[in-house]
Length: 471
Image (cartoon, rainbow, N blue to C red; front, top):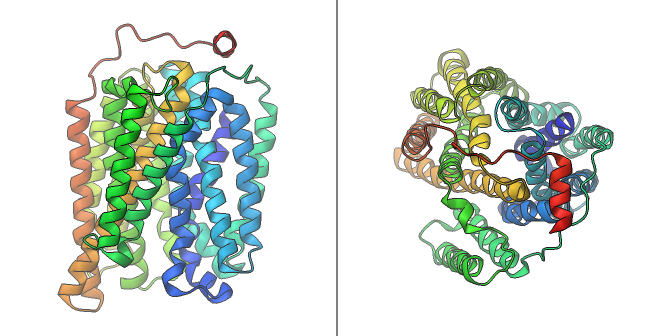
């Protein structure tokens, strides 16, 4: 089961970045209009972020293994459709389907881990594997996308998912523990519509700021609509829903609230940093797509090192013990990145901060997932997983859009050329470092320094299945 979850999480993370390097080739092949090309990336983020809460709750109600396998199969089918696309709308539709499948797959996978492995050493080690492949997928996506685009063609950035998905399905078939009977609670349809609509509008408004601007009527109207839907969603969950999509009492836990605030801030800095470092390598240092991807390999290595350290620390201490030093290391690495210069080099400006920041990120990934599920009842594991994934996705979208606007504004005022670009990237990377410092403050202030004194003992799979049947 752990191997299946790890492979599935790898392909979900891979598709967050694998397409980026291929965009110029996609445009030339399918005839995309320049203003529409970005939707190849944006629509994946839109459907993935918008449906995560629904995917997490559906995993609790209908069975995590069922949703996991169904999401995997749908992801593979959407990847095949994208690889065979002959028109822009076909590729965009395939990417939207990929995001929807990932929204079912990701929270189901994390919930399977947290209900199968007990709190403590076993869960920390399992989450360490999960977080390592998650980070590796995101970092290697740039390399894989560059190599495939340059030597095999852009269609393979979609088709490469097929053997990975097939391998995960084979592994999942070997895990024979059944889900048990479907729980007799109704799905909160009204809450699902409000949450999906609100989060979807929020992501839509944010990703369109590259065309409309933050102060435009279109952006302000979209974000206002998103805020209204989310406010109504909270009211419905608190007062109306009998079986809420999100039980608001879950967020009263300092573990859950602190972990989600931390991951929102950290993702805002991390997504933006990946983006700006990639642009710096290509537009300032003038590296090709394959060389840019190779430049991210040290980042993958450092993340694995940090994850191993976090696993050892988490075996005997709380997640807070890894999140604080990890966040400080990541902040130091991104602060070092802020010193990039227009006449720099990979060795002088990228390698050192990549290693420091990546070790810090590795120290944070598994512990923040462990914190977000500490003390959570097994019947709500999917719900907690959906909230965590939503916080990460929303943080990444908002942070990237906001910092991209700041970088573009700085470059516009500074003139043109590599110096102006490098200055804008450096400013945004410095802000990413500040976001990690704020995340560290959240870990210090909000997260408890000790594990719950009377944490609910994790139930076995049989007990969880029996509980669902009785419900």
